[in-house]
Length: 363
Ligand SMILES: [Zn+2]
Image (cartoon, rainbow, N blue to C red; front, side):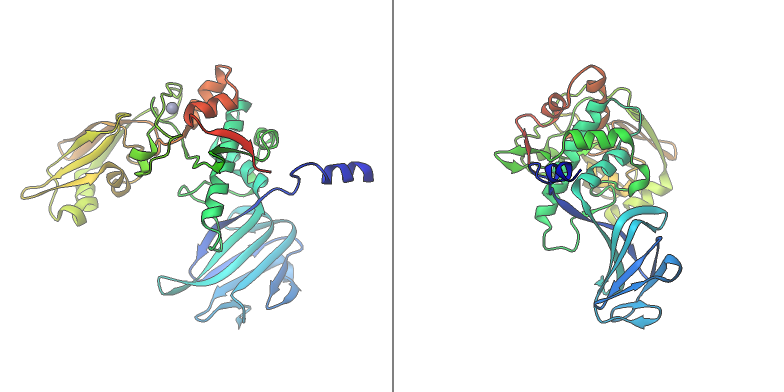
């Protein structure tokens, strides 16, 4: 047994990487529960009574049981999982007091092994029942994205946020066996470009063609030129319709136009066919807005993408038809599934969406 342990510990790259994720912000109180919960604050370790701790955001620092602490960070440890706002996290949460926009708040950060994080992301991002090669492609993309974010945010208390802004991480409760297998079978593998960690963006479904990084983000990345996918037709929102009340359009665009909207029209398209800009016309003036900004103003779950082929008022309703979900840059998740169903391996799938990028083991 000892020999087996020794062997495991000497496997190349065994130590791996870790990441720090922001899992919540609280303006006043944060409550964490765990069996065997230990609170580490101001250099002291204290078992939490009945496995519950409440920390509040004082004016000058965090408060524990109404008492102000000297340090800004409270570390919470447990032998198993810690429960925070309906999600479960393994072993450690850090509650960090800070000022944000001039107001005190508590930021909760979860440090964890990168491989555990990758398993969680694959489980949260993709539904169950997909082919393994699709999960493996997603695992490499998620690991690459996390490492890239980590090394550009080393000076911050966290590297990633558990939201659609970064990658959706829901804690351990959604982990499923295929995601664990996909992470294990691609352990340490990342996409690189000239030996640098690539920016491995991904999204739900592209609607046939992915967007280039230049047109999606304004950043030229040789391995994100926009790709022909053609494999995401099974996606939940391969084609979608949105209906927005005129009054809601007016409210959303008032800061921009300053008067009610009469018409909206797509102005210019990117090489993939997505809307570039939108002309917003009122009675006395007009403005041009980036299509991505229109999406933000009308809601990301109203306009699912900028791949819009109809944008017109019908009476008092704005009717929008579009294709695909998300920004459209990088790996198309539903397309990865389509390719995997058709028998492609994860490396071929990655080569489709990140042409020229090389898969290497980072650890
Ligand atoms: Zn696609």
